[in-house]
Structure formats: structure tokens, C-alpha cells
Length: 136
Image 1: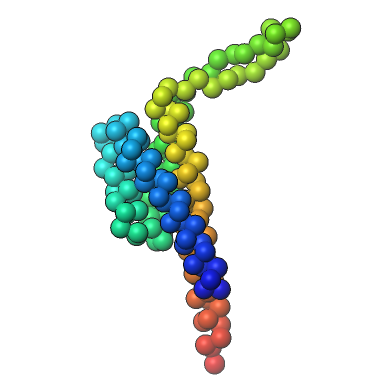
Image 2 (image 1 turned 90 degrees about the horizontal axis):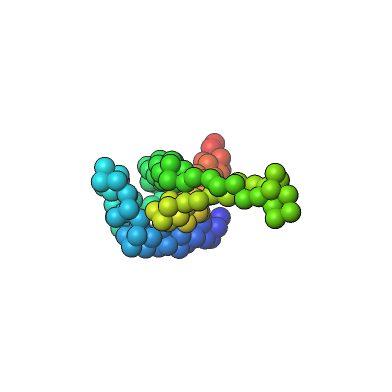
């Protein structure tokens, strides 16, 4: 079981490297000033390797919601008709540069949150299983 927990943690560390590079390299400067501190705190904790905690997971989930809202607010939709039948077609998202960057990071953030959650759940399961064997 410890090997599985270690695997989940290793996966989370890998995803965290990608997230931190995106945050520091591109995303933080694109954010509104009031959100930069929050994003900087996430990057700092990734750098310190303090990521397998419920608090970090909650902050990731809040940041995912924030970026999703920002990306959506900077996205409009255009109608793309079919060549032979203009009444038939579909909507195509048209994103600003920052919205495109946010959407790209969102995928990496979801991967990180999923792997952190898996590591936390596996560690909790391990503790619960050990507690069962320690009962008289």
C-alpha cells in the first residue's frame, strides 16, 4: 500500500512542476492584481513541496473555479455555418490570449488536484486499515 501512496505522490509532484512553470512563466502576470497573491501562494507551496494536504487541495479547487470563471468571461462564441447549409452549424469558442492560457493551465490544475486527492485518499485508507488491525 505504501508503494501505491508513493506512486500517487510522485504523480502529484510531476503535475505540480508543470503547474508551477505555467504559473510563474505566464499565468500570474495575466491575473488581476487581487488574484496574483493567491496564485503566488500556490506556486510557493509547490516549490516547498507542501502539496499533499487538504488545505492545498481546497486552494487548488478554489483556483480552478476562479480560472474557469475568468476564462469563460474572456470567451465569446461565433457561429460557424456549414459550407452547403448556412442554417446548419455550430458555435465555436473565440478566446482572448489570456483565456487560452487559463484553459491550458486548467487541465494541468485538474490533473494536479486529482493526484493530490488520490494521494490523500490512499493515505487515509492506509491509516484506516491499520486502525482495524490494531483493535482488540
